[in-house]
Amino acid sequence: MQLNFDKLDGLVPAIIQDWQSGEVLMVGFMNEEAFRKTLETGYATFYSRSRRQLWTKGETSGHRLRVKEIRTDCDQDALLIRVEASGPGVCHEGYRSCFFRALQDGSWTTVESRTFDPEQVYGGKE
Image 1: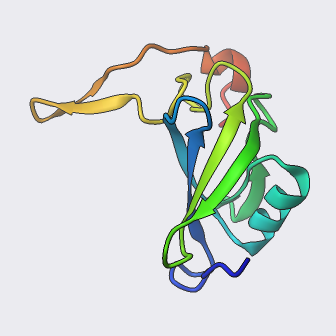
Image 2: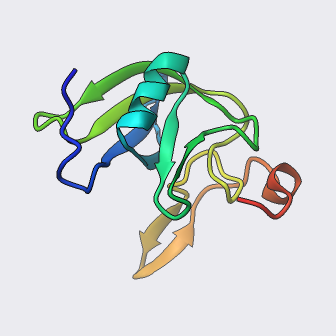
């Protein structure tokens, strides 16, 4: 279970994918402690680079990510975590996926509909 946390200053990117549909929901970063907590609890925990602390998805929103499978790439420096997402979405802007914009004619365009009101869920806090 050796992962390479050396390349990105102690972090590995974690691509979060819906385990049934295959849709990519978000990307986060994990340090060794976040990875261990994810394994122990069965719920995705990340390291916040801006706040410099661990956070478990769903602490505020209740939109938790239950881990179904964890894979690593050939260099063992990135993770693919297949999850069962509870709630209507994982994006703090109110969308099912953080990847709700597409490049169209040279501009980023919103191509998905909001699935929840982030103000009601987060109350102005992200």
